[in-house]
Length: 337
Image 1 (tube, rainbow, N blue to C red):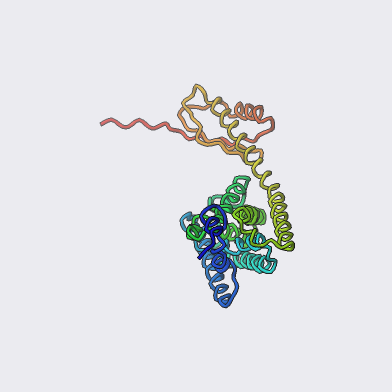
Image 2 (image 1 turned 60 degrees about the vertical axis):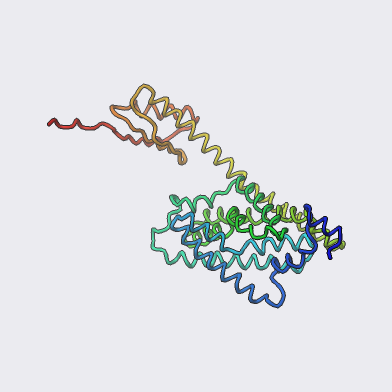
């Protein structure tokens, strides 16, 4: 029969000590079934890589989500932070080693799968499933921190442990690694770096936020020896420093995205003012370097394009190269009966 203190702890916020053995058996790949569990891990990981790679290349959101659910990579990442909270260096090293092997396997497999795609079949500029993973920003970090915290809370409770699939969808691990492999195969090093930053963001967020939650629910109280406490402090320090380092490129990306958005909005407003009093309306405005691409639609003759270029240069305070596309809505009169 459980002690009154254990019962009180299990009914509240704290970690239930009676759940510890089940928690460890689910999270850590060890014991007599270790080889079988490793085999299962890599089979699922490679299948998830296959699904995610071709889901990304076909720009199929549903397929990519399916790969996120199949992929088991979150398990050893959670195991790593749990081992740190529990002060177990051997478990932390074994789990982090499994993460590294898994990461390398996904990138290498995605690289090989991309070689079977015909030339021209991979579009980095127009494929939204790829472009959304090569320019992560601070929103990605905040989302990952929330997902990591949710995942840690879920695995700490036996009664809700089956909900971990929702967290797997919320946080992206295998898809950005697949983008790394695809980008390397295509020689797109900047895209590969961006996708790798997204994975590292998600991984570090799981380690830090997940570790904090597991410590808050009381898992760390089960490991109170001085060497265990010291390992826990060093581990959290490493996770926090990693988050700070990865925040630098995310901040730069966020600033650049905000600047592009504001610049595009200003340019669009200028084009609308230029068209005032005409039948034309703005269809789209985009900016790439010093080039501004504007598409307008209407009838009759639009105002002077040179005047628009000068107004844009004044608004944006820099020289611009205007590319104006005009879509005419004039229709020929229908013939009489």
